[in-house]
Image 1 (cartoon, rainbow, N blue to C red):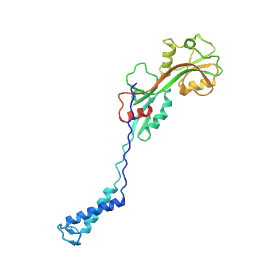
Image 2: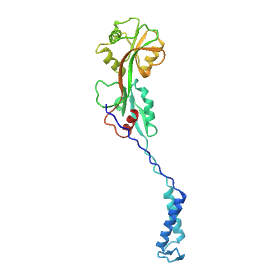
Image 3: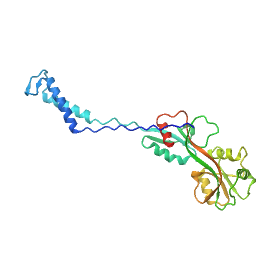
Image 4: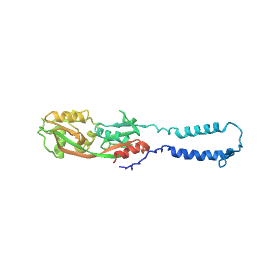
Length: 264
């Protein structure tokens, strides 16, 4: 995995104009102008070399111009950049840190299509990696049971047999759709090419899986560590896998800074 060093950008602050500095600067400017107009400031005698508007009018015009330029508002900050983000269900615990990293400098906009996202968050490596990938954390995938389930701590062979339909017939097995990142990790590290029994029930997301395991006895399912809550037991550690931020190309600017912030 490539690592990105965070680039810290400090906003430029404009110092307020102090009245003392203004008076001093304008006095110097006034004296220079009087000399150019032919006024001997020592003797207070006027020897005009320019013919035109009265001297007071000239002063008033220059004073107003100086005040306008000194009090003009600073250049407004650039508009916040919109960064589109797609997250798998399992990677949703990393969305709040992403929003914190964005702050007011950028706007996070979630999209439903991973191909349209500037950043894709997922758990575990995809089968085929066609984009840049950066590890932002680590997640542990577990086989979890209801507290009253007869299923106890298992070996790899026992876990594989159970989800292949060759274990305790009273166990209600729950898995995810094959395209879900968590299921991909489970299939790779537990099933090893074998199919999950057709009697297993499908959970839409880790939240539904968690709710089912907490509330229904005899259930056995798959959960990321961040989604494990309530009175449940983990009976087999499937794998510890990277949490990834994927980008279409080498990240630059705001996207680079967001990923670097997540890596802290």
